[in-house]
Image (cartoon, rainbow over all chains, first blue to last red; front, side, top):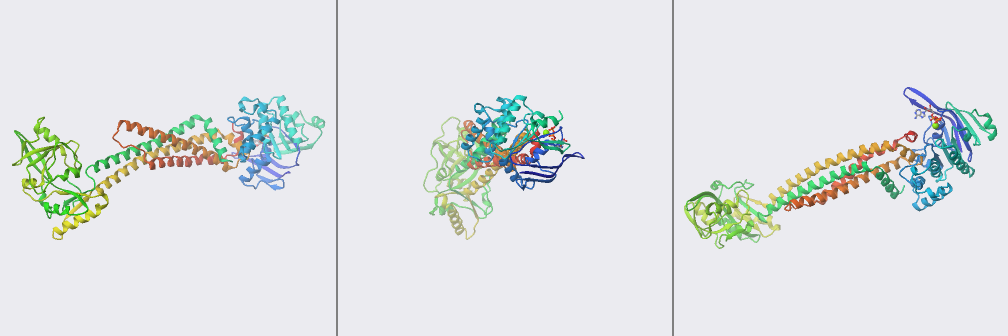
Length: 235
Length: 402
Ligand SMILES: Nc1ncnc2c1ncn2[C@@H]1O[C@H](COP(=O)(O)OP(=O)(O)OP(=O)(O)O)[C@@H](O)[C@H]1O
Ligand SMILES: [Mg+2]
């Protein structure tokens, strides 16, 4: 489904060039569960943004379902993001003036879906997240874990094929972090392709495939059993 | 995105940033209200002046001896200088027309007026009974010049209110004989104070029959002839008729000028309307100031809401949708401000109208429409730049914005 070939992404900072991604080659099949780990500044977020069409590579090709998406127009990229890709962010990115349900409905609103269908679908998804009684609360009336669940509901409401999560537990305590990860894994079990960037090895090792990045390069890409990965990773 | 959703989304942002919303509304409202109030005042002034002019007489044509004279000058003693005199016979000839309702020949001179020991130099106006109707003047007491043959020199006179008070104080004047020049006239009426005339204040006048004036000043020539046309539509034909008639009587020479009151009126009308447009235009500048305020505040808003814009993009909003969202905010703000301004302007008119009940105040519809139009146009135009800037934001940077 995802094919990255010879991807480079450089940033110009002053007269210095930062090589955030350096010759990335990566294939992801539908329904895979990937974790991306690595030291700070190694290019994990840059890679994820690129996968989510929020950023364009400096060079290289990105095929999504065999289509080169780097050449798409702004409008077509936006449409792809809307229908095929969901994002979960470290800082939730909920709009503070909207209720939980309204936040979940936002992508459907942008897509022009009728209000009736919107509220029905949002209610269902929020129920599934265990947030039935929090539907009309604003983000500042919710706990961190609840906020992230609202964000996951929003990311999956359009039934995307891929879910990209950049440190989804980074702002949560370990218990609610684990709850969130379990919800994401359930979604993965139903066939959603899940890619998680994380600093937390406990979470990283849960994935079926781990990618380790250093200095913009993938240095390790393994499909391991959980037990083996735990031994091999530096702690 | 659905229109209703765009509106409710816009509403939720405007509701969240109340101070800036209020500020923009205020700026827009002030601009729109000042356009409405200033144009209303201008229009009121125009209507007032036009009304005053109409009170000089309706469907009025003024016949002046000489070709080139175009406006009524100050009353002149030098009547004999014109190429050929206008005479009473000329005036009589004009009455024989289907277009003419009535005529009043006018002579103007100056003479000393005396009653007992008191003596005044005052303008003397010679005319006929029709003058009262043509000019819509009112009598204070007594009656106006007698009807009948216009060349009968009856020794009667009507005094202007001020002149009457100067000569008689609080004494009654009706029936008394006063001296005008070297003749004696009986006072038969006093003019009411509201009578107006261009150049001469009716208050200061003494009015005598035109034939008496001719012999008093020892001259046959008229200062002018006032002609009232039968109705507004025949004014041009009446004018033609007057020119032809006099030309025939003056051995084929067109040596008179006919001024229609319409011409004077429409000149004033044009001048005052231009003034109204000017002050309205100046007020419209304040709307551009409001537009710049919208731009500034929206630019601030774009940077305040950077993360939100990044999120919308991540959720799949293309650039032009972001533009639509921000533009609709600008339009909503300017439209609401304009409506608010219309209300304030109308209220202002009511208040001014309360203190100056004589002014025919009322916001002209074209002023209201263009004020609202300009407000929304400037709001949209100045909202375009912030909206474009929002649409161009890099979503990655926008999302990492704190
Ligand atoms: N917009 C940018 N302009 C300049 N340099 C950038 C930009 N974005 C990222 N970089 C640089 O690219 C490199 C990779 O950054 P990235 O955010 O992908 O790292 P990361 O692996 O996500 O780190 P962290 O774990 O701290 O989130 C870093 O050196 C960073 O400074
Ligand atoms: Mg990162």
